[in-house]
Length: 336
Length: 234
Ligand SMILES: Nc1ncnc2c1ncn2[C@@H]1O[C@H](COP(=O)(O)OP(=O)(O)OP(=O)(O)O)[C@@H](O)[C@H]1O
Ligand SMILES: [Mg+2]
Image (tube, rainbow over all chains, first blue to last red; front, side, top):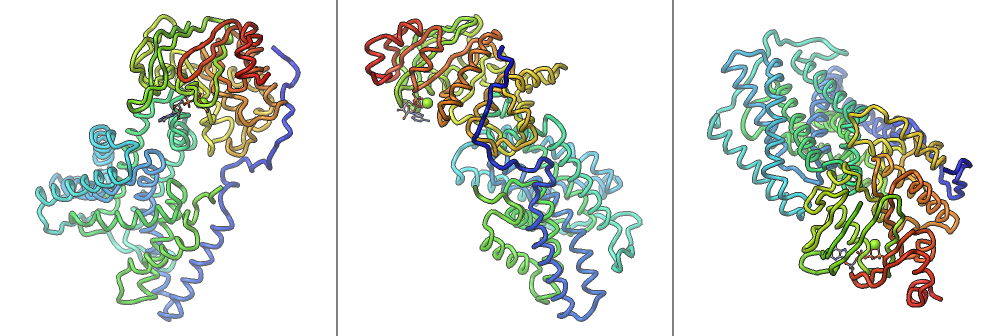
């Protein structure tokens, strides 16, 4: 055993700051904030009413948190399994109908449904990964695309078969408008936002603070390396897909009182989640949450800027602009 | 400890390895040298369970190792530092090292192991909060070896650890290999750069087009005419 220091390594590079928050792209976050402020000002000029704009901002942020949670699940799955999961929105739709069934059929409180839907969606995700997707791991993108599209078709049509095409709804007992920051928001919308942030925070802590979470990030970073430290990557793939699906499931329960429940509702969330994931940087979990807020705001402010158009139009304009200027997404790592 | 008999393997019907016989005993450094494309990496991948052999047997510590999952082989103590290092770039140095504890995560004595690695490679202690991808090549190699040591290997297989390193750093890494052996870990060292590997090794094999063409003690091979001509450029 040599006791003297063995390494006198000259080839050093600039050390990166140690804390994770110091590594966040603060400059870009600043630019995004500036863009949001500009959009708010524009919306004000256009509508001429502070109340309307404040309302749009509050609604946008509240729904944006939920978009963030949905997208976190999708981006996690992409980052770890390298699978572009087109069935993500369909899993959310399953959760919507499960909620509906538990609330309308069994008389359960809409948020208590979380206790059943969350584990159920986790399990469903695990089973789908293990028995349907495991065979497609490492296969060309087209294969995965067809398989996940196939899963979403099967889910949508099964929902149609079981529940029919009639729109359903879930209502929260005692739901009413609450004054918040000069605007009014339904209690259910505020609680959806809070719930989404809490779950997003828990997911973040899982990934950052536990050895299981570190293993998930390790597999995302280098799956060959993960195998070489004895991580059974198959198991991590299954678990990650289950967690990602549970995110969609939780979001489904949280938004159930806010949306019309139809088999196609999932498709809408699917599109939004994909936009958010790309904006936030593929595989970037924190970026997904921030991207969710951006998309929520874009959707609501967009309705003011281009009245009469689909709210998704402005979302797509933002999406295309960001992709042109910064293909790796707003918060993605710059290509090195 | 490791016994390989008649091992053949390849990729998609393309046979690369032809009936290899190879052994590593406890406390040994064994070198596997050979030219570019000779099949050294394929050999290690097969031993690690990443490539399935088409024929032959591998036993490790007396147990059958063919058809065992790579992660299970690591748990049994057969650990590889692969070509390209396979570090977790966006994770910190310390997180990379702690991942090496994965198979033993229910045990309690993790920090002691961490101290041992830092003792071997003090630079990693200095950089412990830095992201792995920001390290220099030499530091990355040390991190890769350190991470593998955290798994408590019985046999450590190193695939060209000196690639891309300055002569000085190569010396540092190879010196660490000796220290590791002295701590009771057998080492299978794959090198294209045969001179240093042969000098370091107790025994060595020469691989050519997927077959072992020579074997002997490190000293014997280092002075062998054929080896000197083909691999040492003398
Ligand atoms: N994944 C793969 N699929 C098909 N052929 C491969 C694959 N990996 C390696 N080969 C082929 O197998 C042969 C042996 O490669 P291998 O990487 O084992 O050689 P090596 O001795 O490690 O070489 P080097 O010194 O360059 O690392 C080469 O002809 C290579 O082209
Ligand atoms: Mg090689």
